[in-house]
Length: 209
Image 1 (cartoon, rainbow, N blue to C red):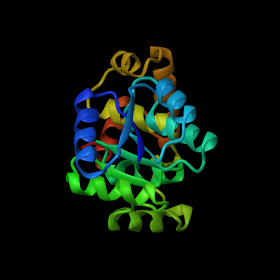
Image 2 (cartoon, helix red, strand yellow; image 1 turned 180 degrees about the vertical axis):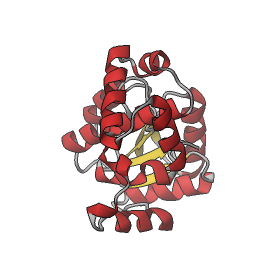
Image 3 (tube, one colour; image 1 turned 45 degrees about the horizontal axis):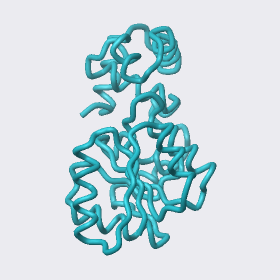
Image 4 (cartoon, one colour; image 1 turned 45 degrees about the vertical axis):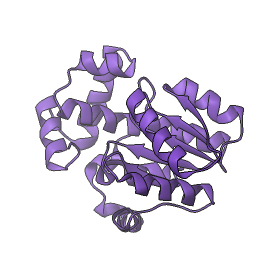
């Protein structure tokens, strides 16, 4: 089995390689740490599975997921991230993921998920299945933040945990002006007035851990 692991933390990549190599014979693994590297490697050879983190420097993981799905629609992408299912699972599946795991899951679950998606299946926990079913309901019941773009939601979460505009820009490799533009759009879409209002909204909506 050939697996591409996309994560900017070496300890996570090394841990995944150990877990998978102990259970899967003949495993071939490559690594990517940035969005451009992930896209280049994902399209350069045939993979059985891509394991993708959503928190990447620069372009977010959801952007990478969408582009991989556009260029290689048959390539199974298993999202493995620190973000809870409540925060990103539905968006990930809509963007082309075939499975969703949080980084706190047991190692046995990782192996089961990888094998299932490599065989052409989907790995969906009961709670994610319920959320996916709920997302197909009437749009009038959708939370206000569902109107935000993936990048806007990412910036909102970062603001909610106390990051400044400058810090967010540095981490995402974007200008402070761009981050401020995202903030303005979020205020408009959520019908709020200040950054403090955004933070309170994110906390009430459970968008931060």
